[in-house]
Length: 401
Image (cartoon, rainbow, N blue to C red):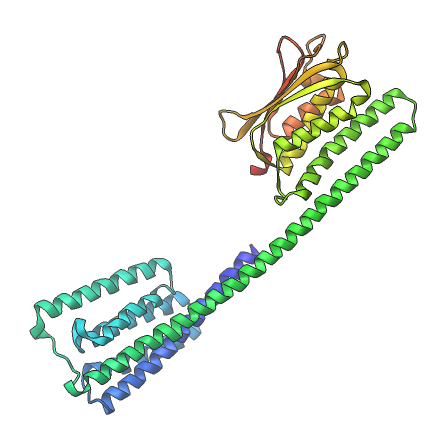
């Protein structure tokens, strides 16, 4: 919010500077053109009066802005004043053939300084004015006369073009170039800061991964220093949970995308590790992974990885006691709801000897499956596959919510 407010203030300041520069420059040039028309090229009547009239009213507009500080009011007044003055001067200097009519194309830019809507309306008003000047001069030529003497036409054309080019090049063109340069420098600065933050976040993932591996090593050391089989089993389970999180941080550190991971690669790496971890029992377990190319955020991947760790570990530990060979299927796909996913984990092992309610189970692993599913704004249930054990988890990518 603070950054957006600062950007809006800078933008308002740039608009104010541009409009003030336009008002000062056009007022001074109008005064000079009025003097030239009156004293040097013998132009009398409406044209020099409009030049002086524009100078006085425009400077008064700037003076009033110092008090009310309303940029929109000043911009609208400047636009209307410029439009009326240019149209009148064009009508009295040749109509559609007047060289001063090109100023209408330039002052369109001044209209956009106030608001985009006013700028668009102002543009259509000027286009309509040009068409009206053309048709009036074409169908009613007797009602129009030029105040420019024949001997002064070339000089008037020259000063009109110089007036137009100066406004377009020095005022609007220079401002456009400065704005482009400012945007380019801002873009470079933002890219550098983004790169620095990405490197910092990548380093954070690297350190988190190292810290988790340290915790895993401590758990492993603790396991070796005890002869209690139950403690060894609990320590090993905790170690697997820690490493399931460490793998995610390692993948985020090694890849360019530091906010999302390729979930299929993650599941493949996690299951490979869990199988190797259980290799003491010489079990030959095949894993079939059916997961599409999908990127999940870390807030989803970590609890989902822990959930898969629990279900897969249960299959390795309990499903294949009678045989050392088995199959575990892991499938992930979207549901009919585009914001939801369905994860199925099943094995062809011995299965539970009785119905087990995941929500009321006393097993820590089953409790974790239920709680992790709720953390992902979803639910978990046991599948009745007829053979083996299966779980189905409905969840959402929580990073989107």
